[in-house]
Length: 127
Image (cartoon, rainbow, N blue to C red):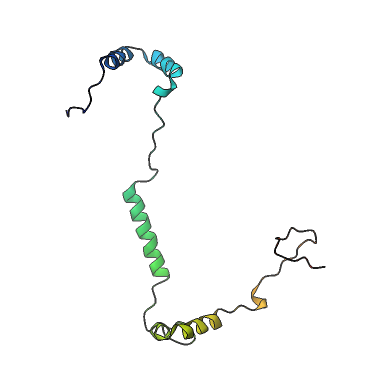
């Protein structure tokens, strides 16, 4: 057994010997009197790390099957392939992206709201 850097004081050794001689009931009473002696509840992982790694790999594999990465020759935006789209200058890519992702009023769902509904401070109330 490796030697400790500091020696345990003699009185601590004596108390340890005394405590070992107590019954389990007496130890519980001692813990009630000196709560600092109680150990915090042990924390443990609910799942083994290897199991977690395997689970994540399985889920990633399923996602790759369902949504495979795009290849350079796959159709992307604006009738262009991935390779063609990313070969464009930034401004042109942004223009195409904005055209493809523009939303009209019909794209939003309409909800009935009570007249006394709370609105954010930035939102103006309609008469």
